[in-house]
Length: 104
Length: 175
View 1 (cartoon, each protein chain N blue to C red):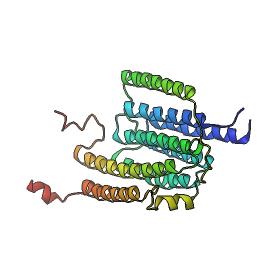
View 2 (view 1 turned 180 degrees about the vertical axis):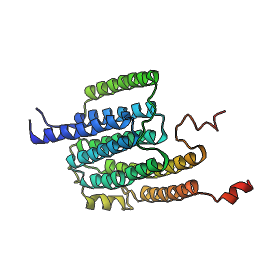
View 3 (view 1 turned 45 degrees about the horizontal axis):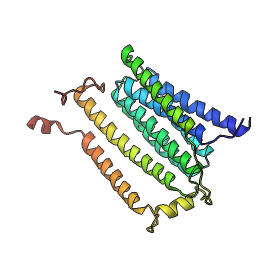
View 4 (view 1 turned 135 degrees about the horizontal axis):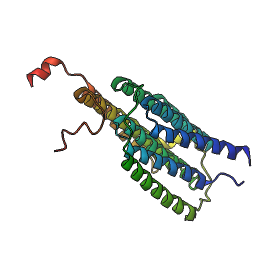
C-alpha cells in the first residue's frame, strides 16, 4: 500500500463536497440547508490545505485562505441564523416553502 | 499497510459517514450531532496533514462555535424530537443522480491530472510563521485582508443583532 498522497485527500474532499450538495438540494428546512453549506465550505478548506501541503510547501497562502474562509463562514452562519430566527418569529416555520412573501 | 494509512482511512470514514448521516437523518437534532462529528473528523484530517494551528481553529470556530449556534437555533425553532418531512422521491432521485454524475466527473479529472510539486525549500506551517506573514506589511503580507475580514466580522455581528432583535409590541402597532 503506497503512502497517502494529494489524490486521496482530493477524493475525500470531493465526496464531502457532493454530500453537501445533495443535502442542499434535498433538504427543505433552512437549518439543515445551512448545515449542508458548512459541509461544502469544509471540503473547500480541506482542498486548500492539501494543495498547500503537497504542491506549494514553500508558501503559506493556502493556510491564509483557509483562515479567511473560516472567518467568513462564521459570519455567514451567524447572519443566516439571525434571519432564520426572525423568519420563525413571523411565520412560525422555517421550511423554505412557507416563506414565499417576496416570491410573487 | 502502515499505521499512517490506516489512520487516514479511519478519519475519512468518520468524515464521510457522519457527513452522509448529517444530510439524510430525519431527526434534525441528530443531524446536527452528526455534523459535529464530521467537522471533528475534518479537524483530525488537518492534524494528519501537520497543520496543528488550522486544526485548532477548526475545533474552536466550527465545533465550539457554529455547531453550538446551530443547536441553539434548533432548540429555539423546532420540536427537535419529531421527524422532519421526507424529501419527495423525485427530487431525491434526481439530486442523487446529478450528484453522482458530478462526483464521477470530478474523480475522473483528479485521476487524470498530473500534480507537480514545488522543489523550493518548504516552510513549516507553525504558528510563528503564520503570524509573522499574516501581520506583515511587506509584499507577501496579509495584513490588509486581515483588517478587512475583521471589519466584515464586526459588521456581521452588528447586523445579526439588528436582524434578530425583538422589537417592542407598541412599535409594531404604530406601523
